[in-house]
Image (cartoon, rainbow, N blue to C red):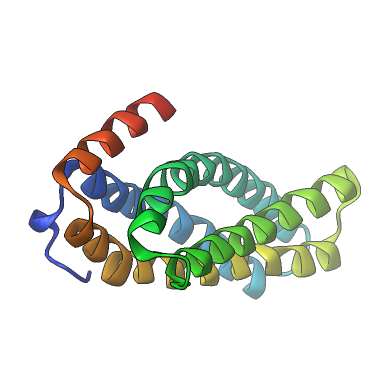
Length: 170
């Protein structure tokens, strides 16, 4: 991991810790996508059911994490960075891109329902793989660039406010 974690204030450390948990969940569903890629026959559909459960659960956790970042950290940082800085815009775009991949996965799986077959599984699974790739890069960017920058530019009061906001969000 990038910066030394002990340098982070509580709210930024909370986001880092959430990344650790989210990354573990992502790695679990990614392992299933690899198994699906190497398997054939009815086992693929069974694996897909597990993948669907994992992605669905992950999606809910990610939404809460993203809400903390977008409604808290990103807003505060935008005030400091100014309107010409695109850092937060890029982060928000990556959130949208990852969320869209996850939503496409869930929507397409729901459309197929119980009639899903091996071919459907193969192409729908690609959305989960794309979400994994997008979020892996995104988390690394936040950990190496955004969080250290936030630690530097946000005041002690803003960090305390961020902590209170995170508690209110849940």
